[in-house]
Length: 313
Image (cartoon, rainbow, N blue to C red):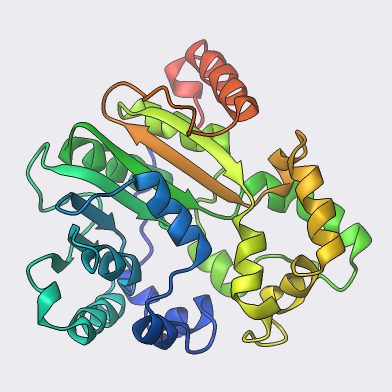
């Protein structure tokens, strides 16, 4: 099928975007305390990195995850195509001191054409990037990730929002909590979230490029709400300033966790995690829930029966 080759300009991710997407002084907080967001820590736990490993941080943004890894003896190549984001990543590297120079390389690069040799990277991180790439771009980026991974290596993805949660679950939430705005996406998000994911679609594109994929949902938003002190650092018009106070309420947290233990998590959980293996999937049970595995297998089987031209992009 022919498709328009659109891209979000790199200039979109300038200082204004950086300030919107993060709470006040969050970057300074990292530079002073070395503290990552909960969902970033969860992604790194999935990556299971060891000192000396070579990891590629695709779409590294301000470089917090890259610097965190490098400070623990991991070799990191951090790439992004936004000049403003890379300037902050370079600042993070400079603040860290000379000891980081041999373990952290910060480079401007397009995720669709990586400046790395085939089969050289043990792990790849693609954190909060997938939703910013048009479908054709995401498929090319994942194909590049597959190319540069060494055999037996794997890719870790985090993306939000879960499209099903916003399209269905958020409507339910507004029925009970009218203080929530009618539109869950900010103007900025409507501009740059041009490919929000669900577990079936993400699983599909990962398997198309060769990965053995596991995709599932979690509730990192609860830990994120606490980490952001109940949304107090965000402007009152920001959805997070309205939603996070609900998510730090002890009773609501208990109810939410109970609901997430049911199939309702498909439309309530907002964090999508995925792992793509270049080789067999380790059989240690770490990679998501049975419900998600069943659904993605069902979707894959149905997609395989469709004519090529009718498959979802």
